[in-house]
Amino acid sequence: MKGLFIINPSSGRQNIRTKMRHIVSQLVLDQICNEIDVFYTEKQYDARNRARVLKPGEYDFLAAVGGDGTINEVTNGLITSGSEIPLAILSAGTVNDFARYMQLPQTSAGFCRMIKNFETTKVDVGKVNDEYFINVLAAGLLTDVAYKVPKKTKALFGKMAYYLECAKELPTQMSQYMTLRFESEEFTAEAEDTIVFMVTNSKSVGGFPQAAPEASVQDGYLDVLIARKTNLWLKAPQMFIQILAGNHPNHEEIRYFQTKHLKVSAVGENAKDVSVDFDGEALDEGLPIDISIVSKALNLVVPKKD
Image 1 (cartoon, rainbow, N blue to C red):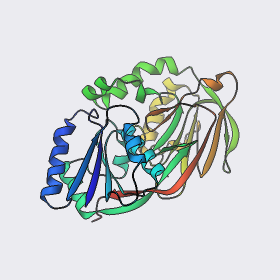
Image 2: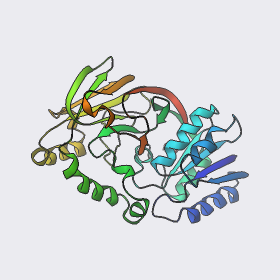
Image 3: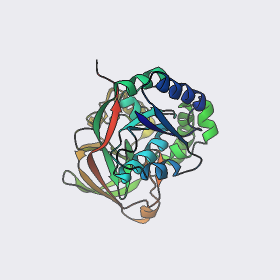
């Protein structure tokens, strides 16, 4: 096989270059691949721009190595290319929600074994305006934490860096709320005092494996969660326990539904102040946004089933 590796060398706390040398040499020595090209990113959009110029049949697989932002860029470029080259993911970031949900290998040996077996499956992706997201889109309380944490802090503390940033931001954000208008076949209404909304493709968000308990990347639907303003100090512990158990959709302050298409706009003075995050990246346009599901948009390399 012939493979292309798109690598973000600054992702995670590990020495990714050393790990990649081991993986590439193992794939060649075991005669799994007879040709491998490597592309290291240096700045934003490098991964997207490299993936978007791929042609059908140019490679047998494209391996994206990095965190959620790198995976998002590769996903956008790959879909735009129309090449339908299978995507293999080696997560090297801090949270890696999508990779964990799909049970993708984290070790060099596991990744090489996955490429050797080379089983693929079609997965859905979300689309927001002209951008794609593989895991989650969100706005509101603490959703901007992902791009506020400095890279050096993430590299040093890992997932704990997000929790520390959340603790710092919570007191300043808990008094904020949005009035949003949601328009879909399943739910159309203005939701006042909204503190956060999420549109997810997989179950796992922010390190919580059951954040969207009914979600599936192969059901042709997006899962929407809308949380209204509540007394966080009194109800946060209860809600936290429910999130861990996947029971929070039953919480009185949460609206949860599935949809194929959703429009979201802000009402009132805060219309321009709502920042939207998709897969850990800031959406430049903000609200209003048009969100939809693109069924079976990616051909994903997955571990062999036992």
